[in-house]
Length: 425
Ligand code: IMP
Image (cartoon, rainbow, N blue to C red; front, side, top):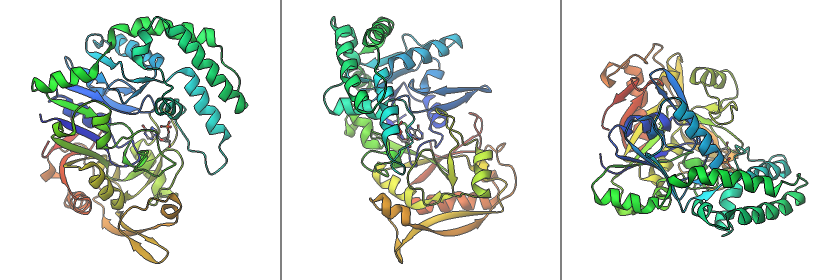
């Protein structure tokens, strides 16, 4: 398989976990490149549901090597819990999973800061973060004040953790949040460091060696384009670059060594957390999509906001990421609808907009311009060939691809590996 970057094209929760799982069969190395345990990649294997937050979903395939790249913010305690759970289910993790020594740690004080900062935000400015410490973790990285996984092996590690907790306590005090116990936290991370030591390596060198040896690399994005710190609906975004450019920054692979980009896009739209969402359906249609699509957060359990497909977002995601192929997911969720709307443009202050405005206040005021297509009103989950889909379903998918550009590579019509129509990937 050519070196492949896989990204989410909407606000996350596009079903990336399943598509990565499908593509992993052809990859040698799977690499996470950004985000942290805010992600929740759901994969169903043999009827058993796995939700992975930090470990690449490639771990569910025997023999594949999985890397957590330098661009990820890594919660070491969460990582150890996830490893234990997988091991208890019979998966071999050690010897197959490696963590970048350049990756920054998300510590318990980052979580405390995340909660306190969110609490302190005024109504209307709350982001609705996952509470996993992601923003404060990345802030320390950019501020050159972070602890990297490589530091976990240093002789003065415990003292450094204590100093960080004390610094965090000053910030927490300013936010009227309780202080944390520096000694207890340092002890916990010293124990975690010993357990993680064999996994902490120079993953950048591993990526280069694998690429030189002609291995196939699959770079796994978390979240989605519209949550990108640069290209998303700022400030209602995450603190990293889930877009294709982030894959190189977060792994060390040269942009010249990326062969193709796969964009994962749901056949409708969801968003969890606050921020503009032009095609959101507040009534019955939204409830139906949520119920049929099981649209509840894999990490937080929060109900997701649901709405129609937004082709302005799809086009934007194709451009920002250079999407070659789409993996479209959850078409089957639409099986019972008699009519389906597609947002083809926005209307703002009496003008038609075909591109995504940068200002969230403008996006908030945009009204979707819809076209409506007839539904197909029959089950599609059992189908295994694109040609066997009902005519209206094929027409709907074709229209989405036409509006967004690019080519359809995979169409997913159910949660299992078997509910996957392979077209060009
Ligand atoms: P944070 O990444 O926890 O700081 O949250 C920032 C925003 O990104 C919030 O709106 C979250 O709901 C959203 N978010 C973060 N991770 C995910 C994800 O994996 N799927 C969907 N939304 C996410």
